[in-house]
Image 1 (cartoon, rainbow, N blue to C red):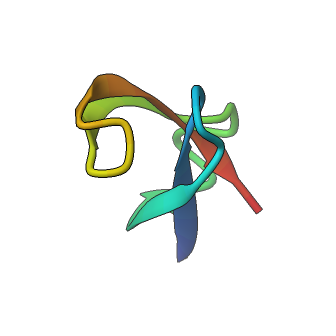
Image 2 (spheres, helix red, strand yellow):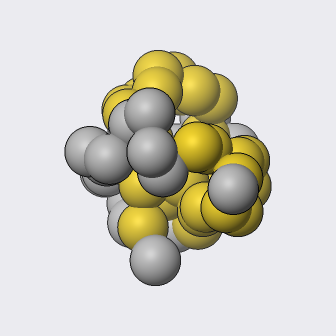
Length: 49
């Protein structure tokens, strides 16, 4: 039931992280504040396809 999703940076739009989520429990898109090595700062990363 868990699907693999890709997290991309909101400032530079690069795809940096992959993770899994349960689509039944969290149907909305995930957002995490994670480190972006291209921006070299902590930025918000959102779920993409």
